[in-house]
Image (cartoon, rainbow, N blue to C red; front, top):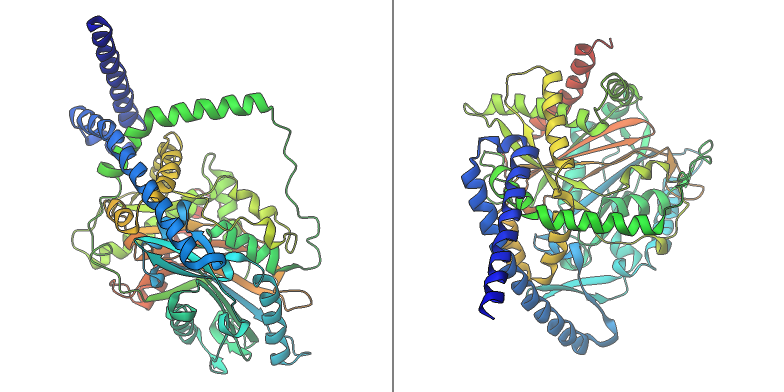
Length: 542
């Protein structure tokens, strides 16, 4: 008996030693910025994390038991009106105030003079109302009980959630930014318990500086709480359900996938699961010691919940084509790599101007959804709401973005590519995917405590593009579509990139507590476009 126990102890020590050795090696090999961390420190960190996993598992089990108890208490209290607890990764997005949790989609469509402004607004309103009134998460109020967020079924009136903006008849670029920001910063309906709404300009307006000419437009702004759905689900709703195709795009559709071998698919998933289990400690250590440790003036203190919304959208496809040309010229450089490089260089200029001791790197959180690139093939109006899974199906990866480093724009791109390659060679995505869903077992206060250990300066969301669409059946064509991301987990800076009709939209959402004015935000965005020009020039395309 003693011999068996001794053998078991030695086996556990051997397995633990192998896990530590493999993770230290992975930690040193695949993470560029971790090379200045000693092997001893890495080994101690990985050993500590590995030993802590059983404690975390026990905590999750206790949380799951409490969650089940809360579920039945609420079921008894609300009866048939009770929908359920917010679950999965959706629960992670309930820890922030609703003011910091709003995804916002902007649509600008040209006014058709053959119809009255009121008929245009009413048609769009009716189209949105008929679609959204049958969707459970859009007919619910959200409440908190014992640290958990839950949904109660309700009836949402169209006038309550589809509201009108009353802008001036003629506005310029500055007026538009203020109008959008004020609308974005307003509360959700029913005291922030209904987690979506749509704003439409009640009358046509003339946007002088956006178009370069005086034309009449309508604005629409769709706001949705991030716990209702992620960006991919919102994209499918806006383009696949609420929009309609225009002439010439009927050929769009998802490319056919070759049939998969079920056995090979299962075997591949098993191997990937074992790999994730083996290398999870190194991934966690990287996010604790290397990334997510920012301390700078753009990540300092609490957010106040009000934001400036800034954007630039090109009037033709010049910059979209520039990015594609750079991608063709530089093998291995992806569309996101080029965009991240331009943002990195622009932010570097901003930090140099505002600080005498700017950081060499900042941590940027990037949402990743497998297969999201296929959304560019989505045919407008081809989906029904029942075909969309309204949930958060993404995971965040943390990118160590090179910032204030003296280097050429091409060298900066290579640094970005190295960091992206390190993430792709790691199990960060898989670990974070499981981690975000496991956290849903815990009450909001504990989720907030755990995620509070990660300090990221900014978030960047790069969504695949859409062809030109209308805002409903027999409705005006959208001239522009773009979006802004919420300020989750105390990240007060959010960049959003979208291509619509082969034109580049770049948005910036900045919490008003941070030292970035509207004019400075415009400079950051404009400089990012300028660095695309410089990158094109340095590689000899021009």
